[in-house]
Image: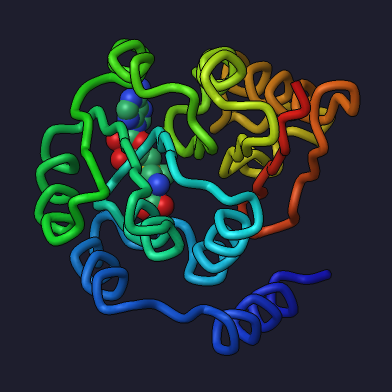
Length: 215
Ligand SMILES: C[S@@+](CC[C@H](N)C(=O)[O-])C[C@H]1O[C@@H](n2cnc3c(N)ncnc32)[C@H](O)[C@@H]1O
């Protein structure tokens, strides 16, 4: 499929299914410019909402907040007593996310490097879902954590898991670091293990790996 066909198909799906509430629209608008296009797309947000409802998710850990668009999207599918802890390393982004999510008490922004701050969330475990959307190098580290803190029957989801299409290339593209490529291949391979997960990779623009935890 060429690029044009893919874009038209994505646009068609987004037009039909990419419904956004006021908070989502406002968060997306706040990211226009420098951060344009980094957040998940509206139709991906819709898919996460569907998965949250299907799996009866109440407690979510998100790694990689940016301006809070995905957190607000997931919150829209949570019950009143649900909660999202979302981790962001960059202080300016954490500040923006706090502003964008201030009307939703079910969202807590945890500022700092997730490699360190994840340990502060252990007391809230078990979680029903982990959404990993941050530094690629640490995806396997985040998966180690999620395997310990997400309940059996919960969801582990990683975004950008095609790693700019590098995961299936014979030769690593120069923009992708070897360590990140290794980490992403390991991440996808682990979630593909049918003994441990009911998983799949979806061919979104950047790739999304979705797995139901069986242990
Ligand atoms: C792709 S963006 C997240 C987009 C967001 N999930 C959305 O869809 O609206 C990735 C974010 O992860 C953050 N990040 C990268 N490494 C991190 C780390 N070690 N700990 C916490 N956040 C990190 C970046 O600063 C960036 O804001």
